[in-house]
Length: 171
Image (tube, rainbow, N blue to C red; front, side):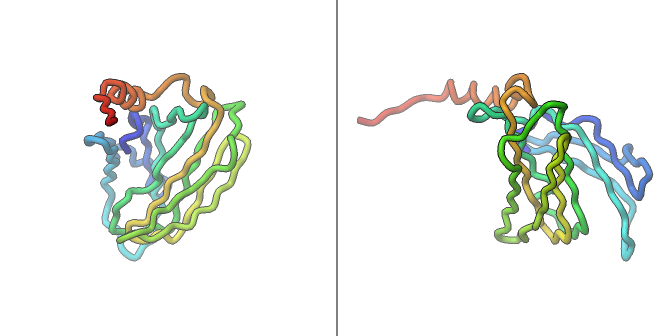
C-alpha cells in the first residue's frame, strides 16, 4: 500500500517449517509487494504463515492514531481457506470504538466475511473460504500518540506536497 513506510522482520513458515529465505519484500512505486516462492501444491492442504512488522502504517487523523491495513492482495487467482490478521497492541493502548472491516466486493471480487475478536493486547481478524480476488481491510483507532510518536514519512510527504500545491479561487 502507498500508506506505509515499509515492512521489516518478514518471516515465513510452510507447514510449521521456517522458509523465511523464500520471501522477498519489495517496494514498487506506491505498493509493497511480498513475493513468496513455494513448491507446487495440488490436492494437498498446506499451512502458509507470513508474519512481519509494519513501519509507518499508523496515520494521524482527527486526534487519533488510525491503523488501516489491507490484509490480502487485491488480485489473486487462488483460493484461501483461512486468513488471520493479528494486530498486537503495545501495553496500555486502548481502542477508540470498535475495529472495523471492509471487503470491497465489486467486479471480479467476492466479499469476504470477517469476524473480529478484541482482547486486552491484540485484535484478531479471521476470515475463511476466500475466493479469487477476495480481500479485506482492517481499521482500528487509538488516542493520538499511543501507536506513533510522529507522522509517518508518507503522511508527512503528502502534507508537504499539499502545502506547496497552487491555490486558485474563482469569484
